[in-house]
Structures are given as structure tokens and as C-alpha cells.
Amino acid sequence: MRLRNVIAAATATLLAACAGLTAGTHISLSDGVAKHPYRKIAEIAMSASKSERQTFDDALVARLAVAGVEGIVGDRYIEDAAAANGIAPMEAIRAAGADGVIYVWLRRDSDASRIDPTPGSWGWTGSAAAWYPPVATVQAMMSRFDFRLYDVGTQALAWSGSTTTFYPKSLAADAPPVADAVVAELAKRGFVAGR
Image (tube, rainbow, N blue to C red; front, side, top):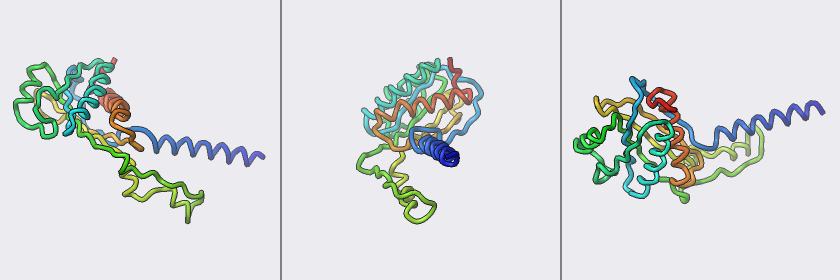
């Protein structure tokens, strides 16, 4: 009886750990050292779709505000956020009083491209391998957002990072947790002061 209880507890712990590793959004890359916290950040979501940009703009600007940072929707300074380039947008962002600008590359997800794994029977070899999908399938079950924060004064890269979302749903559903993860990482590293 005692052995059954130990096995049941170990199984529950293992399943809880696996659930934490296979669901949700986390920071998969973070690189940069803060020289000072930023107080006003322009945010430019890079996507050909205006509605996608708007969705992510709303999520990130709201999360920055909670951290005590004024977010500026940078989309208004550029004609085509999918191919933003040039000096004029930076001059406009500087004139608006921003001390940082963060570019976000949105990775489109599609329910048609998502493939969920088929559970196999438990065991260390043989059919248990069916529980874990092949690498190509795992890539289809993830979405990534890439971020680059530049200092407006020096125009130098201050921070770069990526998020990984397992089992993505839609941009509207995934944008808030992605924004939460990024702002939490920026706060942890001292790029935003937080409240």
C-alpha cells in the first residue's frame, strides 16, 4: 500500500512538471544589460496585417503601463510596419519623447498548421515514442515572438529576446501572455523600473 502511494505521488509530480513545461508562454531568449530603466517606449509590431499590429500594440502598451512605463504605439509613425526602415520614423519617435523603441516580429499561427501529438502507451521504449511528436510537428505546435529594444539616444541595441508559446490559439488570445512575459523580463533585468 505504501509503495502505491509513493508511485501515485511521484506520478502526480511528474505530470504536473510536464504540464508546466508544455503549455503557455515563456521567455526562450533574453540578452542585454540595462544601463538605465526606460520611462517611455515606442512599440512597433512588424506585420503586414494592421489588425494584428493593433492587437499586439494594445496588449504590450497596456502591460507597459502596469509597469509604470508610457507606451507609444509606433505604428502611427510609419506607413508600412511590415517593412519599416529609415530615419524619419526614429526622428518622430524621438520628438514624441520616447527613450526606447521596441520592435516586435509577429509569427502568424494557423490552426491548419497545428498538429497535436497522439498519445501512445506509457513505457520507456516502443510505442511510448508516439507520445512525443517529431521535431517538425513540435515546431508547428509553437509560435514565437521576437523582440529588439533599442535606445533612442544611442540607437544601439539594448535588449533582444524571444518568447515561445506552446499550443498557440490566436493572436488575440496569445498576445496578452506574451506581453506579460516580455515586460516581466524587462523589469527583471532593470530595463523598466516597475511599480
